[in-house]
Image (cartoon, rainbow, N blue to C red; front, side):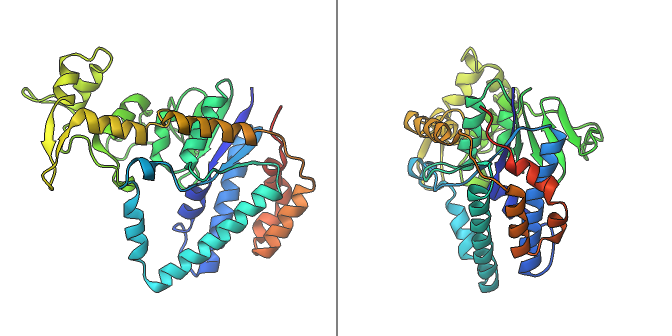
Length: 328
């Protein structure tokens, strides 16, 4: 049984830019440092065997559902000239990081033009059911994958999410600020159902039933009641799914139709058959050992180029996860 570190690479790198204030060089340096430090910490804490960096493609979801992530372009168009320049520099530096882990380390690096990193990470977990997995990401979408053999490490907050709860970097339970009690473990199935019903504003996925309540009333079924009835498809399930509503353009929607659309978009095990084949083929193609030598020396050269002295001073420790080959 192996333990894999699965890195949501763009998420980790670009989230890090918001951790520190300063000029562009400071932010880029912090992004490199947080990304590599997160890998090193997860490697040590979870006694890992191999690191897998997952990269973004254009995403098949944009062809399946035209509004998907359209809001991201709107946000980019609204950037000031200085913000656009910073964005450009960050992407150039990210490309250099991708090249480094791809050609100078023994890490597995996966990308396909039609796939998102989420697809590849979920696909890897499904392709290695008897192994353990630690996902490095701040993305809440991965809650649906949490299981006894799969946890998520948020390197920005130093929090690990497991099927038993939320834990800080010392292993203590994270206290919920609202309830003042230990933060409860995710309920993957219900969280996914709720997301498919409510939609996802960050990805511009519209709600299947706008305004739906979590808990129902005497006269109206809520998400909890419908979810509890999902297995039998009884009264509460049908009462919700057969409801109809009209959007602001006068178009009528049936809840079930929009829910099923959102399942395809949001459930990381429910991609269309042709996409599943691409995911499986991409993983099979990349799940082979690389034979890169002198990884520590290559890391030191990379650090010198980007003035990362703190990492260079501990190059041996940072290089350990980068030089581990895919186990056969």
